[in-house]
Every structure is written in C-alpha cells, then in structure tokens.
Amino acid sequence: MSNGKRMAPVDTTWLRMDRLNNHMVIVGVLILRDPVDLDRLEHTLAVRLLSYDRFRRKVEERAGGAFWVEDPRFDIERHIRRARLAGSGGKAELQRFVAELAARPLDPAHPLWQTHIVERYEEGVAVVMRIHHAIGDGAALMHVLLGLTDETPDAPLHGVELPDEEREDAYSPPWEMLAPLVEAVERGVRASTGAARSVLGVVRRPAKALDLLRGGVNIAAELAYLLLMPMDSPTRLKGELCGEKAVAWSPPIPLPEVKAIGHALHCTINDMLLASFAGAINAYLAENGDATHGVEVRALVPIDLRPPGRARELGNNFGIVAVELPVGIDNPLARLKEVRRRMAALKKSYEPVVTLGLVEALGYGPKILQDRLFDLLLSRATAVMTNVPGPQRPLYLGGAPIDQIMFWVPQSGEIGMGVSLMSFNNQVQLGLIADVALTPEPGEIVKHFQPEFEQLLYHVLLDDWGESVFRKGEPAEPPAREAPKKTPRKRVSAKGRKAPAPQTGTLAKKPARKKAAPPDEQPVEEPAKAPKRARKPAVLRTMRPTEAPPPTRPRRRPRAPSRTSA
Image (cartoon, rainbow, N blue to C red; front, side, top):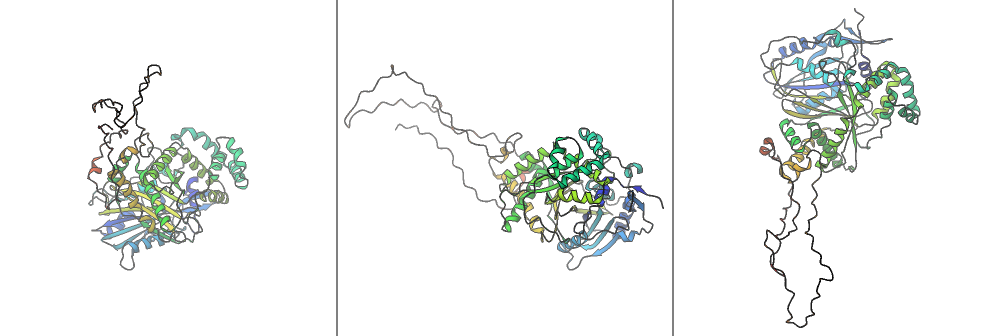
C-alpha cells in the first residue's frame, strides 16, 4: 500500500470538526421521475463517483497529519445501497429517512461517503447522498454532482474527466486572486505557532485583543476581531443540542419570478431569498408567541474563493462571512432594503479570505486549540447558510430526468440550524435541517418562506410606489411628499399703501376683489408629482398572486381649487 497523499490543512480542519451532536456531513437529495432503470442508475453512480480518488480512499491520521490512502477493503456495496421507505413512502417519510441519515456518522475506516437509492418514492426514485466535508465543500461537490449527470436521457455511460491528479491532491492555496491580503495571510500561516499562542491569549484574556488589533495585519488580530463580535439575539433557535435531526424543504419557486421581482426592486436574487427567509423566521417566532422587535439572527455564510480554472477540484477553498438577518423588521420592503444594504457592505469585506487563512492555520495546530476557538466563534451565530446556484437546464441521471435537487449543509459546534438555498432548472427551493431539541418541526419555518416572497410580489404588482422605492441609489422608503410651493407676494411699502375708509351699516360695500385669474395663470398649490413609473418587466405583467392581497383603502384625488368668489 502506498504512503498516501497528505491532506491539505484546510481539509484537516473540517475533518476534525465532527462532534457527537453535529457531524460534518453534507446531505443531498435528488428526486428522479419515472422511468428509472435502477441497475443502470446504480452502475452510473459507481463508475462516475469512483473516477475521483477521494471516493476510493479513506483517511488515515498519523503523527505528521492526516493522509488520503487507498482502502484495501473497499466494497462498492458498502457505499451504494438500496432502501425503501416505511408507510406510504411519501414526502414525510423521505424527510424522516434523510434526517436519520444526517444524524448518523460515516464509518472512518472506509471512504467518507455513502449513497442510498430509495425505491418507489412517489412516481420515481430518490437518491440520498452523504459526503464528508473533508472531501470537498459545497461548490466542489456541485461539480461532482454535475459529473454524474447527462443532458440527454440516452447518453452513453462514461467516466468523469478530471483535472490533473497532482493539482487535485496537492495543496496550493488560491491567494493569487486576493492580492491585498496575500502577504499577510501567508505570513500568518508560516508563523502559525506564534499566532496560535497569541490567539490563545485572546481566549484567556479578551482585553489583549486591543493590542493585537493595533498591530494591524496579522492572523491573530483578524481572528480576535471575529471572536469579539457581539452575540446575536437570544431566540428559541439557540440552545443545547440533542443530536437528533429533522429536515424540511419548500415547494419550488419559479426562478424567473424571483429574477423579475429583483429586477423591479433593483435587488439581487440572494437579497430576495435572504429577506424572505428572515421573514419566515419572523413569522415562526411570532406564531410561537415570541417577541420579534429588533431581533437579529446571525448566519455564517461560506464564500467560494476558487480562482478561475480550478473550480472542479475537490477540497475546501472557501471563506466565511457573518450575515446578520434583520428578522425584527416586520415590513417586507424595509426588511429587503436592510438586507440589500448589509450584503452590499459585505461585498467590500476581507472576511472570506481572512477566515480561509485562519482555518488553514488552525489545521497546522493542535485540535484542542481549534475546538476552543471555533466554539467561541460559533457561539455568536444561530445558523449556517449556503446559497448554491445549480445548472439552469434539464439534467438526467442514469437516463432518468431529475425533478428536484436539494441539500443540507452540516452545522458546526453548537449551531442547531442549517439553511440551504438551491436553484436548479429555473426553480429555487429552501432546505432546512435543525436539531429537534430547538426546532422540532422545521417545516413550520419553511411553510412561511413562499408567502413571504409573495408579499414582495404583491408590493411590486399592487403598490403604487413599490417600483420607485428601490431605484438604484435611493433609499428603500416611500417617497415623501414635498411641501407645496407658494408664489411670493409682492410687498408694498408703508408710504405707498392707502388705508381704506371706515364703512358702517349693513349696506356698506365690501372691499372689491380682484377678478380671478384664468386657470392657466392662477397659482395653484399642487402636491409634488410622483416620479414616472418604470414599465414592469414582461414576466411581472403576466404574473398574478396566488392569494388575494389584503384590502387597501382607496386613495383620494386632490380637490380642485375653487374658482368662485367668497
């Protein structure tokens, strides 16, 4: 047996993050429609997955680190199995089956992956895949998934064209595309032992962080900043875990609708989905009698940092940003505005590359230090959230059409919720996995996701100012009416002004009034004109809400000025 290939420090960090209550396993589900040839499907999975070395190798930990080595007792039947659901074999049973697998660790004595082919699921087959995070991150595993599929149902069986073997397995961090922090992070990695001691000092004495921050660009200072983030709001979504999982997913939402609404409001698809999810949590908390005003829920979001040309390589090459969801804002448009503002600020942040460097440095150090630091960081968040854009075209697996693709990200430390937003074939879905000690029924959150999105649709279709709210560079608030402009009156000096003669009696003449000017010359106090509305995209002009909108009060027209004399 060969000596194997050393595991990259970043992958080592994720390998060591397994906990009793949270296993670092990515879970994916593909739903196939009939006709499905089970033998062909099983053979396709075996041939194409085994094209990747890491799907044939197990992990061996030695004194010098972790290594990928060939499994001398490799058996494909241990990794690809068939299963049938209990009861009616519907969606509820599949969700329970997926939750049970998500709570089960993979066997470390063999390659860290497993696939279950669920027969007779509704009108087709469900494929449930479990892959350890050490093999690859979400972006890498999406390319693995694409390598399993075909664009036609009758495509011939073939292996997967892989990148160069040395490039796939050898470690080379992608710093070249992130020049401003390259030198600082690499210097931090080379001096990881000293940095680890400095950061451990921060853990023991938080006041020391100020000295590190004054020191500028070193890895300990950046980590100190992340560790000193304030806690997000305490909610029922945070607490002690039990390790038992529950999963749920939403019905598909047409992606063209999301794009059209985003275009009308000048927001990204990501902004729309995050705001809708924040609204779903708001509704869930309120439904359970919890206060929601001012609630902030922080989610850790991975950001892919692969440079061009290396997107197909396995492994972990992503940083992390902390996104605070404004759950406590009830108005959907105001909530979307705040999400857009925060995401725009994060695009200018160096957090992703810094966290990737930190994770790499921790891969060199002892596990006890890694656990201590990650516990501090993860205690500041409620959820892990991933948004993976999939292919927007029909795909086939083993000759069968793929109807839906969903996945659930693993949670780390004591985080009890994983959120996944997945788009495929012009539809998008929300996937949620949670610890049952905190969220017994994640479907109670998921059920609010589509209605929250539809509220944004109502505002665009039915509200007079919905389109002007989110114009680029303008605040996301209804435009305020300007004060009416009055024509200045001509002043007359006191010397030239004649006092009127006093008049008495009931028949005294009233002061003569000037004749009213024609309407086109008379100054009228008019309200400010509303900005010209842009034409709605074609998709929006044909869309209709699925539910009746709440009744709105008719708007009064401004009363025309009187032309009669008093």
